[in-house]
Amino acid sequence: ALGGFPDFMRKEIAEQGEAVRRALRGRLDDRFATAHLGGLNMDARELRSISKVVFLGCGSAYYAGQLGAQLIEELARIPATAEPASEFRYRNPVVDPDALYVAISQSGETLDTLAAVQELQRKGGRVIGAVNAVGSAIARQCGAGVFLHAGPEISVASTKALTNMTVSFTMLGLLLGRVRDLSAADGHRIVDGLRALPGAIDQVLTDEDAISEIAHRYAKARSMFFIGRVRAWPVAREGAQKLKEVSYVHAEAYQASELKHGPLALIDQEMPSVVIVPDDELLAKNLSTIEQIKARGGPVIAVTNADLPADAADEVIRVPRVAPELDPMLLTIPLQLLAYHTAIALGRDVDKPRNLAKSVTVE
Ligand code: BG6
Image (cartoon, rainbow, N blue to C red; front, side, top):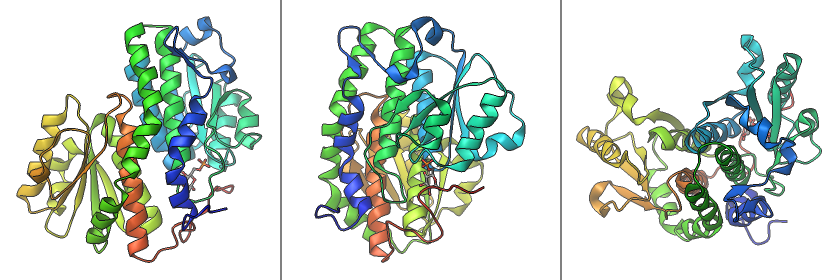
């Protein structure tokens, strides 16, 4: 079942290009620069009536939802947010009948997410699933949605399912955008970017040895920061989550702009920071964040698709560009490898981290 890989996590990281190809199959429309998501069961009028999009998921699925919210706002200019499904039913949420709620789950069996769907439906909310496991409880409860087509995911830490969640939300953003303000030219740019994604993921994976060396160099750290802003903020959160899950190294994600409002006090030689630096309009801001950390003696691992000089940080991990909106997906891949190789360096059981289950079907 492992096909020559040492464990499922490593195998599933490698399968991501193929998983993305499966998610895209038959769904991209070159003529109208949009996407077809037949499982939504919504016509153009209904799509246009959506006043906001709310993503709900647990763990990595929640971070995928944050990336999704960012994508929906950028592509469709519809207000969008994400929240942990595990909190939703406890806070007596105001359910908006004009909103589209998206329940995100690899397994389709996570109890907290299922309960959020049921609470939404009870209150008249319109909810669709973004689910990997066909026939699962959440998929059936929603009755409509987007299947992720990532293939079976065995490793507790989600990799390819998370990538396909984000790919699916890009297609949703494309579809919602193209019945609103998104231009055909921008639509084509996103379609082309999605098509280029599998090859770009494979290219990141060719850097594995260098990333593994970095992981081994910092594996003794007691704690690490993961820093990003706007598009890169959910990437940072997912990076911290992965490291915690599989290596048990404490990690905390912070928005770059919030660093100076408290956590900068923790920076010293013993506290490495992974800074996510997309090549976008915030590049200069991110470079000054790196300077602030270095000025306090903190080691910096930069993960970037910008043309940073090699001495811009202690370590520079580079990924290709596809389209600014899609780059967060590529910037996530080295963080999976960083977490994986840190776990290997520390002798952890990566596929079955202590205290965790692949799908949590209890409260
Ligand atoms: C957690 C797993 O408990 O459930 C995470 O440890 C996972 O890795 C989360 O992201 C959500 O699972 P699912 O199946 O609903 O996507």
